[in-house]
Amino acid sequence: MTTTPQRLAIEAHGLRKAYGDRTVLDGIDFEVPQGTVFSLLGPNGAGKTTAVGILSTLLTADAGHARVGGHDLRAQAHAVRAAIGVTGQFSAVDGLITGEENMLLMADLNHLPRHEGRRVAAGLLERFALADAAKKPASTYSGGMRRRLDLAMTLVGGPRIIFLDEPTTGLDPRSRHTMWGIVRDLVAAGTTVFLTTQYLDEADELADRIAVLDGGRIVAEGTPAELKRLVPGGHVRLRFTDPTAYEHAATALRETTLPHARLRSRGGTPIDDTLTLQIPSTGSQRELRAVLDRLDSAGIEADELSVHTPDLDDVFFALTAQPTAPNALKEQVR
Image (cartoon, rainbow, N blue to C red; front, side, top):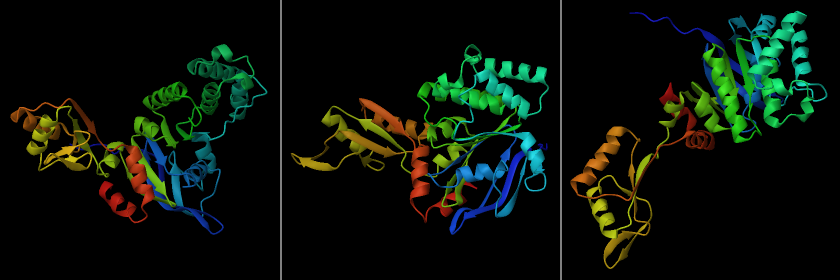
């Protein structure tokens, strides 16, 4: 049985960009399948916004080539612009006019007939829960409302591919979750989203694939789960209130146990001041069962049990903090 390869919304190969002596993008490559969320992570100044600028035709790459929506970035820039929408770091909302007027302005810029423009604007204002505030000046909107209006304006032309450059920066948790729901709905309807963000939980929640950009290069790429597996440090943590139970557990798990705190001698018996043990683990069900079976066999019960697996914060710090590590880690994911 053969499977049809997933069509690509974005393809980038060897993209380079420098400003004077400073190289911002040093030959980056990635592919984004249609109808997925691709997230580009990296520290401030890593080149995320530059990548968005190039792919949205706002900037010209010094070298390399790309296709967006099936169109060559250089030779078919007009067709690329017709296929995409861009929500930048800074809101494009005009605070001096109403939300509805902002939407109608975008409809005019997209050359929609007047009747069609009003229909599309009204539908998007309703979809983004802005209909009640449509006649009010955008300057009176909250940060979350302005961001929703900004994204609604991006959708007026019906783009198949949307670039979201740090779309939830500065929003409160409720507004961020509202934006996440909107992004999920867009992708479910077939839209491709290229997301840059500094919120690692946001990438973890939304992205099908993540690329980590550092020093102008993509140092790792994969699904959130694949990236998390690159970083060691997962463990099962057991805490006891009874020193005797702790001692017996330490003996039963001696071959795999890493003490949480330094052991010291009290009356000739090793005791951990916190009565806590850590057992290296990937967090899999099989490994957790093995630990519990060993404790059950010894008749020991822990008072608290927790499982820690590396998250994207751990991945981010590991990949962007050590200049010599990224290439080896990258090879593990590809």
